[in-house]
Image 1 (cartoon, rainbow, N blue to C red):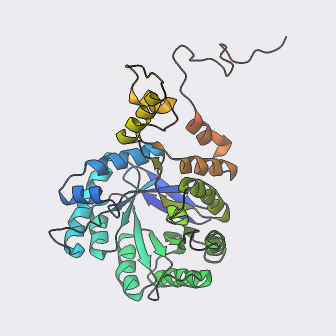
Image 2 (image 1 turned 30 degrees about the vertical axis):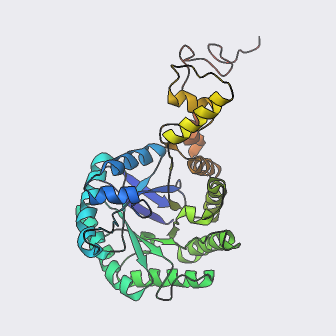
Image 3 (image 1 turned 120 degrees about the vertical axis):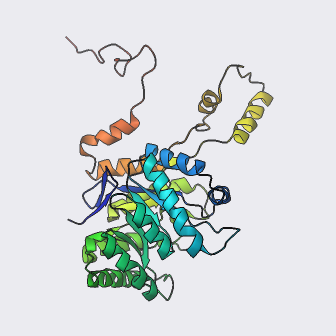
Length: 353
C-alpha cells in the first residue's frame, strides 16, 4: 500500500490510500494577496502567524509555505526569496507542530527551506520540464523528501488527460533514475476549471484512478481550481472533494478556513436590521449578532469543505467508528446542561419499565 511520509519535528502525516484525506493548508502564500505580500516585504509576519494557527485549528494536516513575494525594491526572486523562505519556515514551525510543504518555483528558495525545515517536509514542486527535473530531483534525493509532481512539461499544460498522465509517468520514471521511490512522488494531475471545460471533473477522476492503479502514486490538487470563476464556489468544492476522494485522490492543497465576516458587512447588516424596525440590544456583541442573523462568525473556523472531507473519511472507512466526525460535530453544552442527554433530561433517554 502506497504511503508518503511527511514529518515535522514531533508529528507525522501519512498520505495514503488507506489513510484519512491529507489537507494541505494553502493560506501562507502571497500570490494574489497584496496585503500579505506588502507585509512580508516589510518584515511583518503577523498575518502568517494568524494563518498558520487558524489553518491548524481548522484541521489542516500539513501547511504549505510559499514566500514568492516580488519585492518593489528588488524584483529578482532568486535573491530575495531564499532568505524570506528561511524566515517564514522558522517562524511557522515555531508556532505549529504539523509538517510543512515547501512551495516555490525558485530552486534556491526550495533548498533554503530544506536547510532549516525540521523533520521531513513535502517539496512543492517538480514538473516534467527537463530543466526543472535536473534542478529539483537532485534536491529531493539529497534531502530524502517527498515531492509534488505537476503534470505539465515543456509544451505547457495539455487539455488531453492522456498527455498529463504521460507527463506524470515520465516524472516517476525519471525520479526512479535518481533512486527516488514512487511512494515519495505525489502527483498533481492538474484540475481544470469546470466553468471553462465541462469534462474537467470527469477528467481528473479518471486520471486519479489511472495514477493509483498504473503508477501506484498518491495524488493531490489545487482543490479550488475546479470552481474558478463560478458562483457558490464552496458548493462545487464540497461536491468535488468527496468525489475526488472516491476516485482515489489522497490529498489536496486548499483553504481549510472560513474567514471571519468583516466589520463592513456587520455594519451593513445592522443598518438593514435597524431600518426594518428591529431593536438590537445595546449590550449584544458582534459574535452574538452574526450568529443570530446567520452571517457566519467573527472568528476563523473550519470551512464547509472540511465538513465534506470529514464525512467522506467516515464513509470510506478512514475514520474508524466515526470518532473524528463525532468530535467535529460535537456541540459544547450550554451552562447548566452538562451531562444531560439529547432530550435535556439528566441521564439521557429513560428506559421503559
